[in-house]
Image 1 (cartoon, helix red, strand yellow):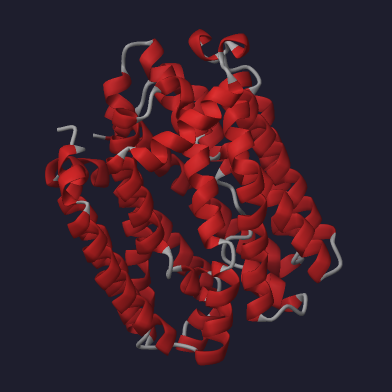
Image 2: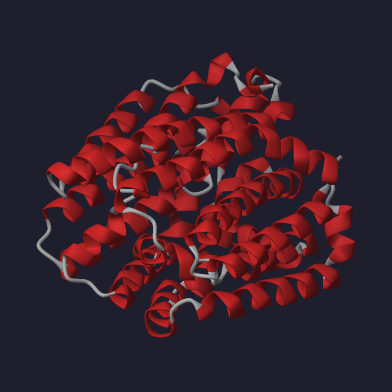
Length: 395
């Protein structure tokens, strides 16, 4: 039931999750960049900038969250996203978009890991930590509801003025930071003086690399989702090229959000029933099949099967949540998760740019090879690490 994921003491978190999901530019951001004169490769490069900035700030932001509070980290992330949105809206061209992307990357790093950590800690403080996965699923559903509203409203605002979706996002993100100011963070995670930053840094890196379960999950998260950027960096013009009417572009994204809202309720239960290893197999298959059918260039296949990428990513988040909260101590959880994300960002640094360039050059055939790579490499890594992934199951 949806109500299982609602815990009244966490209402601040639900409101902030809802507000920060209001990304009004979701259905038009690539078209906006194209209107500014950017090529697909340049648009991909903005993703590289986001990953690069994220790589630089991810680990320090994780230490900051563990030392000074996850609440403050989330507020900084919200304000940073608001500033980045303003720069996107008001900047003149490519270089201002690069600056805005860098600000977004920094903001992303402050948000990454902090939401999951503060949610678990808040539940732990009221002895309801067993509901963590259900609460995360409920929060995801709330976020996708906000994204549905923002997608339609943003497409409407774009027709009036291309800047308006970004300006609207800036206002809502600022509101999220204001609302969260009244939230009381659990006391046991506000002890800045008790956390040794240098020790936390070493422990976080060592934990990800030496714990075999965390290591194989880290490798799989790179392998399985590496190639989907070929779609995410180019999907709006490709959908139009495949035959989707421009008027239905926002509806396409809204359907994806609705599926994710449903997934936020059902997927945690599916992961629970399938257990970790079989759930990972499902994720690999969904990614591979989704990429393969995108390559058909036929809108009747491209549109529905591209949702497989979204669903698989969402399902992975629940697999990840199960493993993280079993293998990473609460005190350094944000630090360790940020360290892992920093390493992922390093691997992904040139990924968006390269993938967008490949699609710009070779078009739809890129997705065929991507599908094959995800399936083959993903299954190989899963087979090698099967002992540790089987043992990681918490059910």
